[in-house]
Length: 217
Image (tube, rainbow, N blue to C red; front, top):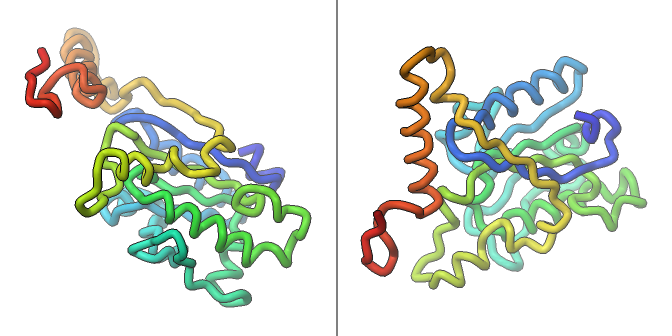
C-alpha cells in the first residue's frame, strides 16, 4: 500500500499455496486503492483464476501480451491508445497465478511499460517495469509453463524466477491454510490440520510418487 500510495514503484511476489489467502489479499488491496479513486488492474494467467478476482481479466487480454511469447515478441499496444492511457494511470497491477506463465511474458510486459511510460517520466527508464508497482502471486508447487517437448532444464529456464528482474522482487510468504481453519471449532481442527499438512507434503514432494518411479512413503 505504501509503494502504491507514494507512486515510487515496487516489485513484490506473494508466495503461498492454495488456501493461504492470496485472493483475500487481492480483494483487500484492490478495494483499498480503488476507494481512493485510483485504478488497479487485476489480471490472472488463467480464466478460472480471473473469475475469483474483482474485475479480474486474463493477462493476455488486459495487457495485450502475446499468447505465444518469444524472446523477440512485443505487446501490441500503441502509444496514446485508450489501453496505453489506462495502464499509465494505473496505480497498481496485480497478477495472480504468475508462475504458470513463461518468463518471456514478463519480459514483454517490462518492455511495453518502458515504451509507453518513458514519455511520462524519463528518470524512471532504468527502473524495472518503468517504476510501476506490480504484485505477482502464486505457488511454484503448482503448474510450471508448458514447454512442448521441453526438457526439465527448458522448463526451469522458462519459469518466473529465471527472469532477469527476479532479484528486484521482494518475496512475501503466506504459510497458514486459512481455508481449512475458517469457521471450524474444536476437534475438527486436528483433522483439518492433518489434511492441510498432507496436501503441503505432496506439493513439497515429501510423499507420493517420484519421477524415477520409486514410491516415497
